[in-house]
Amino acid sequence: MSRHSTDPARRLRRMHDELERAYGPQRWWPAETPIEVILGAYLTQNTSWKAVEVSLANLRNAGALNVEGLRALSIEHLRDLIRPSGFYTRKAPAIKAFIAMLDAEFGGSLDKLGDTPTAALRDRLLALPGVGTETADAILLYALGHPVPVADEYLRRIAVRHGLLDPAPGKNRKGYEALVQLTRSAFAFDPDANYAQLFNDFHALTVAVGKAYCRKTPDCAHCPLAADLQMSRKEQKKA
Ligand code: SF4
Image (cartoon, rainbow, N blue to C red; front, side, top):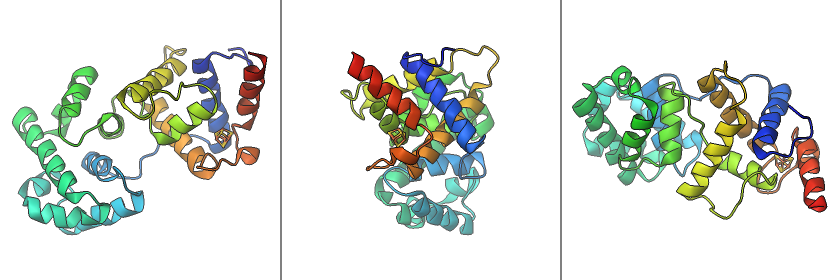
C-alpha cells in the first residue's frame, strides 16, 4: 500500500495501523457475557457507560443479567432497575421485545440467534423497537461475533475531520451506512483477515483516540493521527 495514497479507504486502513502502533491490540467491549453486551447496547443509547454500569449492577443484584431473569421480570421492575441509564420507559419495552423475539423465533437461545446469517439477522434486529443501526451492529459484532463494523460518533467525527467522509448526510441512516461502507472498504485488502476481530479492534481504537484527543475541541498536536491530518490538509490545498 502506498504510504501517500489519498484513497479514503486506504487512508482509513493506514490510520487503523497508526492507532494500533500507538495503542496496541484492544479486544474490547466493557461487558462480560453476550446478554450483558446486548443489554449494554440498549442501555448505552444517549447515556454514559458509567450510568449503564449502575443499571447492569442493579440487574445483576436482581438475578436478571441472563435471559431467564429478564424474561421473569415485570416491565415495571425492569424499568426501575434500568432507571439510572435514562429513557427507561422506552428502553424497558425494547429489551422485553428482544426477549420476546428470542423466545418466539429462536427458542430463547442466543446461540441459535447468532447462527442466523449476518444480513438476515441485521434486518431482524433493525425491525425491533429501539434498535438503530449502531445498536444492531454492536449486538452483531460484540455479542454474536458477526463480522460487521460498528460506526459510532467517534469514528464519524474522525472521518469527517480527516476529509474521508462527506458530512452532508449527517448522523442519519444514510450517513451511518456510508461510514460502514468506508470501514468495510478499508479492510478489504486482506483475504485472510479475521474481520470480527479487526472490526472489534478498530472500533476500540477509534473510541480510544476519540476520548483522548478527538473531542469537541480536538487536540491534534498530540494525537497519533496528526500526520494523516496534515497530509489531508495538504491534499485539500492542492485540489
Ligand atoms: S484529534 Fe485531530 S489528528 Fe486526532 S483524530 Fe481528531 S482531527 Fe485527527
